[in-house]
Length: 294
Image 1: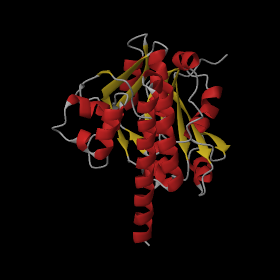
Image 2: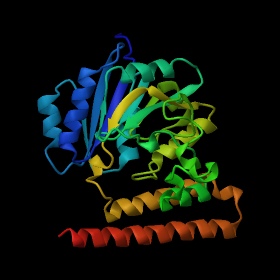
Image 3: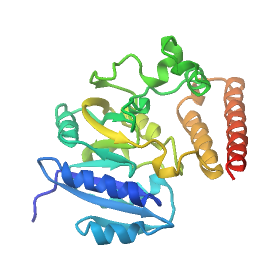
């Protein structure tokens, strides 16, 4: 029987042909010392993405699926994986030299670490602050989306969502890392379970991280590994209406599962009302932008 591969990287793509090509080339150039297999799940791409993968990356395993959502598409590959560790990677990312080795070294450094995220940077070189996060509270979520919590002068309670207790270049435990790069022990995935397919897109990464902690597994931020993240690259920039609905439904689902039981019905109603109001504002703003761009 062949030896189990140490790492399987799973990339779910929907119509991001050029970005996916760059992502896969970076994986080829910077594979970890222990070896790696790569699986691309094409989630109903409307372009020639699947043909590009078959033509240019013959060693990559391709799974064709309908546009079933991020969680469900990843789960197709996770169910079949026999690797010791799995990396969920967005197609709008590129790994750099030693990124995967640094992340794997951290993953195996502690038997209780179940998930590792790395330092994500944008094309301008700035930190993608979503690469290390704390679980949102109603206050920190409001502060973050209003912009107040993203100010350098914001207090800890207001900036809490961005895990400001931990420096950008400081390794340490965090509540959550970003779904663009989630390296997990296969053993942890077996005990925690797969991604929740009740999330079509967005918030499933926070949910999974919460469930890792609930099951006794640590989530760790490792800035010794760095990856490029083209923010919004795989969703063509601004979210469309369906994506906006999915994002806000995800917010409500996450709150209902993990926070609502700790609050009274009146407070919960206020949170759901706030999410609905934010969806309305975002949807109207998106419609105006699309009309203005014509």
